[in-house]
Length: 126
Image 1: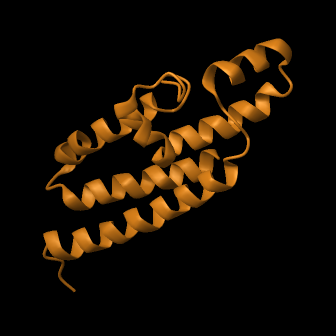
Image 2 (image 1 turned 135 degrees about the vertical axis):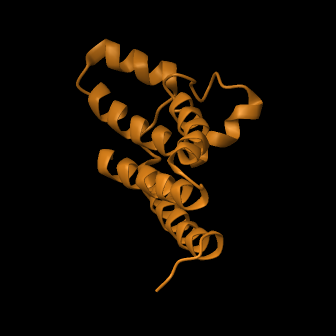
């Protein structure tokens, strides 16, 4: 899950670097997206307790799927504390396949947009 999450963010940062004019602008563009996904990982802002206007982010949040898969696996061996975390967060192990599909799709889409941005926003010479 960690490697898959790495590739999603590598693709996102590649896109931001392709859109931005310089490194500072790329960091400024990337920071809000990264912060939002990190907050909506299902542990800090839980899916059951999230306001309605935030609910849309969980099905597309790579951090949510990775955190959910890792925590559910670890909670199985953690006894009552693990059961509490699962009930508090609303995590389930039935969304792992969906998470993999979403993350792979994000990688493909972000890399494609990166290529489009490089081609159309910058004058690349052969």
